[in-house]
Length: 155
Image 1 (tube, rainbow, N blue to C red):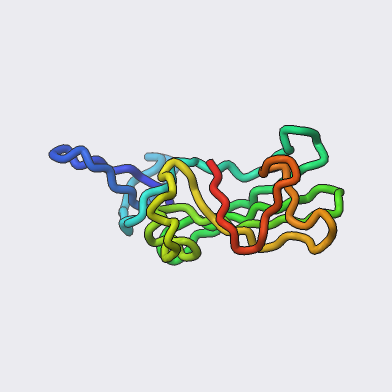
Image 2 (image 1 turned 180 degrees about the vertical axis):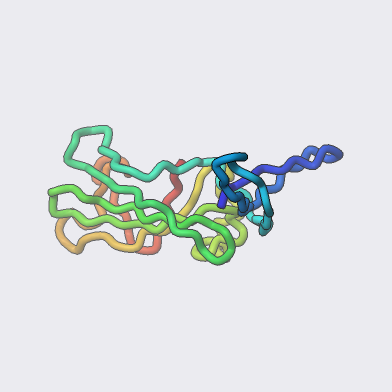
């Protein structure tokens, strides 16, 4: 499966398709195209281009976060988990879902949704620790705290 951008030459509108290409290979002729099948993707990919991997806080290396490889939800959105793997006593996890905010499964029905920037991808905080530093993370201002179910925007 490949995400293929197809541009309407009359309108300039780009639609993405997951296309499956079938080829056969013979030593005498190489690859021979046989068939294509595709399914349209109705929600465009987020412009944020999230890159899974390990991230360290900007203040020091005591804040280490892992952004998971995405899973694909039934409507074509990508689902990521952002979690703290620091050795400190804090715990922080957020679930981030790409795509249009109006139909976001966790945030779309919230009153604030109409005021959120389309240049970010949003999710919600799903866990923070319960200790003295509960919810502290280098993503917030000094001594800033996160609470479960708060909105987080990333790009």
